[in-house]
Length: 226
Image (tube, rainbow, N blue to C red; front, side, top):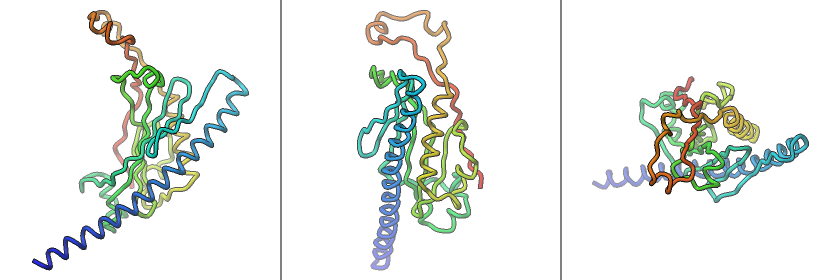
């Protein structure tokens, strides 16, 4: 019985230390992501306003674990999840030799980037969808991989090669830039007229914005290569 209790205590201790270290790595990376995003927004604003003063690019601090970048009709929402996660053994990243070599590498912090229409937030349209552009997984050694849409135009070795990928300011800037490019290049698709030809009075009274254009171009890529 005592041996079992010691095993439980040791297991909890090692796993807790691992998760705390990963959380610190993820939090530090997210803070740098905030700073780099502010620098990028300032740089873009200076360059864009030279051509068109009406184009506004804005960084919005939301809280400790969220910030937004608004540009044109798009809004990027970056969210750091506070929990540390792992995946089933058959998940692609778990079959990576690098991950399999060390039990601690099976746990990840994660940061998500979502694309919303800016008017969704402005008019508090609660039923409007947001679209995941990318998820960055960060491990105990500050290695990372990216899961996300195919339009997230990153070199293959910067997406899936977690054994070689180490986070840096350059990588974080590329990730923000790529998310913005993906959002800009994915236009709104209007609804078929047959979907909006009839409405109820209840719909009219409850929803000033009866049509719901959607971004249909995002395609999630679940496959990672080694």
